[in-house]
Length: 302
Length: 329
Image 1 (cartoon, rainbow over the protein chains, first blue to last red):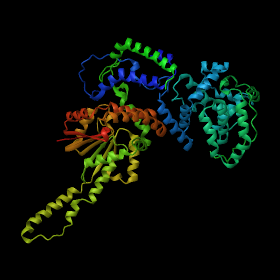
Image 2 (image 1 turned 135 degrees about the horizontal axis):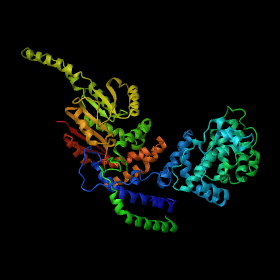
Image 3 (image 1 turned 90 degrees about the vertical axis):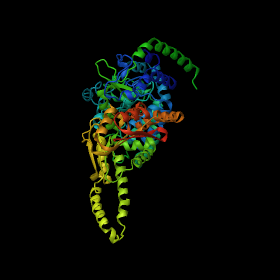
Image 4 (image 1 turned 135 degrees about the vertical axis):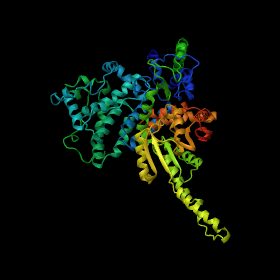
């Protein structure tokens, strides 16, 4: 069966329902109907047909882990419902990060395809898609990052992680994207989010998040980013809101549209590079002052 | 709706699929597993939703499912059935029609829905019972009948002693998380003195034999590995004359409604589970386990085989839920 996952990496509803119908009707359903009543006896029941050795393949659920581990195939109707439900829940309770992820995955179909095309055109992006680097605590040496000299990208990232108590493992795996490549693009986007914070110099409070989301909207085109950037300012306090609209929003728009394609950057190779130099390479305008981490702003509304 | 490219590619896929199936149909047929088939290492297999797992694993996996959903259990019930599950449970208790003084054992009754409804019903009956009204008649008995009425008074006081037996519910569940939720609900509602929460396996109840008037299991029996053992245990703990009642999701009898029900179950319920309880897979298991449960007639046969008499069933809401009942006579 593995050859078939290679042949068709994209899954649309008709293929999915066909597979389920075939699988369940031809193989599982005969199993399914026999289980009525029989599986529930504790004593041995005489069988008419001989029993055969079950394949190990049959033992896992026919639906899960279809294209990648952690994959839950969903129909278009389910995706719509999930998008609406997760969108509402994410606004009502922003602490539910799994809802934000689900919203991004279910609404990002076209944006993810566009992103993948863009990444394939860029040589570094193509390399990332082929090698599929993952950012987690086993691939990332936090102590090494801490030992780098000041003003390097790696050191700033280390400061970001340690001062805010983040771990690179905290990003949820992708579940609802029905394509192996696009699943990786979504995962990469999620893992790079913290790196965006560092490169743009934004702390992780509500204002910083909204600004990063605004830049990401221009860079990725994901509807989740656009909606977060539009509705996020509703939760800001008056001081932050004023700062946002006068200084940071124009900067974010300029920065997001003029910077190089940030998804196609192999961040893991730039830890030792000086941060200002890195920003210049990426065409990122230096962020306006006043948002540093020197004093924790007590007026943020998150 | 499908673009020509997709149609062509799906035709190609169809061909490849049917070739594969044709080549491997013998292998597929052989791999159809029956309930007692031996796996590679001589373990027997059972169903867990649409999955096949060794029997020993099923209990553990069901435990994990309910541990994950325990805190959101009531909320999800209300969301999935739009509150109708309350009506089903109320109807169940009205079918039971318990009298005050009944000893109930509610198995797989973790969060206590049936137990609390039972206690409310019995309390209401107690307050407006006709027995009390009878005793309020103040009629003077004529002298010829006074000797006989004296005997009546003695027997009345005897009756009043036995009638003071309080209705009591023993709630038994295999999952401690569900029991904890039930215990806190009981405290909030004021039922702590009339309930008792015990952790135990329905296939092997830690209870004495011949002790209970009614045995109920509501939406729990499909999660048990061996239903016949559960029925045998039910027979054991009931008093002679006791009643076995089971409320369970069952098979819809009308095809059109069955299609609607299937679409709703498979399309909407796991999504609700993900949004409200952050758990897609538990609710997918729930929906699949409903399909795996025996049909109404088969289950009635199993109840009869366990020794119960007058075994019958009643469909509610076109068969979405069914009440099965039997007496230990």
